Image 1 (cartoon, rainbow, N blue to C red):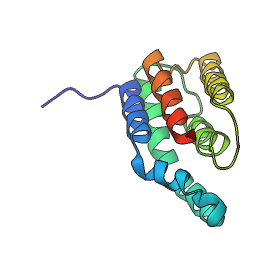
Image 2 (cartoon, rainbow, N blue to C red):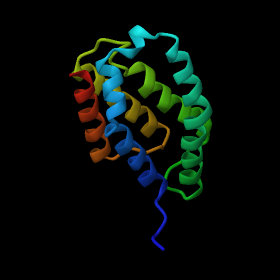
Image 3 (cartoon, helix red, strand yellow):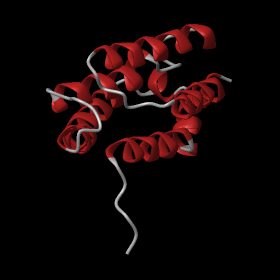
Length: 136
């Protein structure tokens, strides 16, 4: 049996899954949010009820394993996920890729200031590249 992934590796895997998500790309390309705005409410509920607990568990695990410090795993998971899902959504907000990258760096720096190093340089590069593709 293989070794278990660390919390940081699990976060990296989640990033990879999201950045390779063709369905998300198609939805953005078809401006689904402008056509079906009530779907945003369901997306946010789903995010909060399904994904936040999973990410919070990874954050809790990482803190328990001394990979980083995370005093508030649920709230941190909410912050990260809602930040990416809402504030960086290219349909909701028309921003340049540079502006999106600044926001990604801001989130990373905010997490680092709380002693939560979730993203390495490769992760940040993947995230920024994914948003560049989403914006085209």
